[in-house]
Length: 371
Image (cartoon, rainbow, N blue to C red; front, side, top):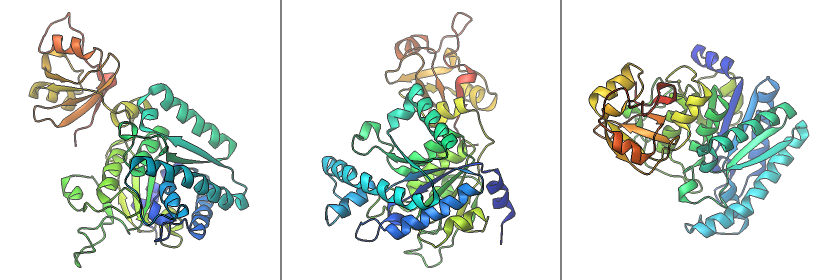
């Protein structure tokens, strides 16, 4: 039976990002399961034929490489991980291509790093490419470029990548398919009283405390990772459904608005594409610490950030870089595009008066503090 709240979310979802985890695609030995991939393709095709634009963010390249190379477990050495990704990515895409071919759907591989989202030009390039693929009727399949990614340019996991892609496309809905039924009130493996949480209006500390620190054997993302990604998406106006991708017909049930998995409601209305990039996509390269008066002006009154309210400057940044704006306790309250380089910001901090222009104009400032 359809849930009215979910029905409204689904009806608004003209563009959908679906992320599928390694454990959904692979068997316990780490080998790709062709049957699971075909079933996923069949469901995604039905979502598309309902008139929705779909992007698939897929994990599984490293897990597939582990299986094809006959390794007993996922390696920890970076070079070995990247080698597994190189072997596994081609096998993964071949299976997707074969699975979508009966539906007459062309698949398009896009491999990204976090650096592609930090650069405004590359960010827009990626967005334009995906939009053009939509026009051609192709299915964009996105993965992190694991063969070249190092710590400095990694997303951390594909849950976060999927949230970034949702922001890139201003998609109203992100579906995270994992190997658990959703968010539980406690760890169901250790607490028999744990209950599935059907709807989360806002991701706060009480919600994050429900997540354990577990990670899957083949993948990198545990529940904390998924909640972090869901927080990024919902803060930018994206609804998120987390559901068990191992269940038969799970996507059909999600898009029938059945009460499956956990629905995370968007924390705010849709925000402009520019502010999505500034506030929730580009990684900050420095920090500005501000006093209580400036926190109130920025967060509550929607004002620009003036030099008089700045008490500290951290990092090396240039004019036009994205920086994190923090309160005296170090909690981020906003992100924005700075009008000054770090050295100039340091020189101007605490100064008042007309000669000193705002450090960050309110049009380039996004409040990220919990509401």
